[in-house]
Image (cartoon, rainbow, N blue to C red):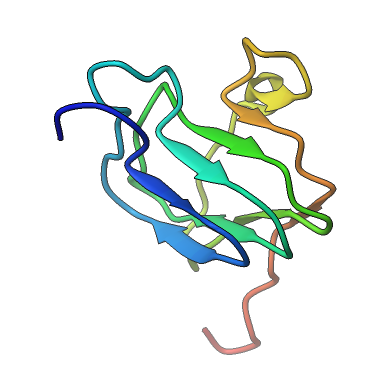
Amino acid sequence: MLGGYCITDSALAVTQVGTVNAGANQATAAHFVSGDNRLTLENGYTGRQWCKLNGNNDVLALGGSADGTFDTSLVGTDASDIFRRFESFEKPVAAPGR
């Protein structure tokens, strides 16, 4: 990628497992422009230049059936926050017997 966002559009559902980085001339890797957006982070995701939201009902979800850790200090509304402007958060519970 020469520059710009790696992911940009409206009403997106993105599952992140590997690495997503911003282009050479952009500080943000993903820009969810409008609508209802969902970003699910699976164990193994990486990236320190992540996400800016302008939607109406944006969800940050922690996915996968394995236990993991997530640094909640990366979430907020400041420009320095990696995950910013999400309206809700989810951690689905694994089904019994999984």
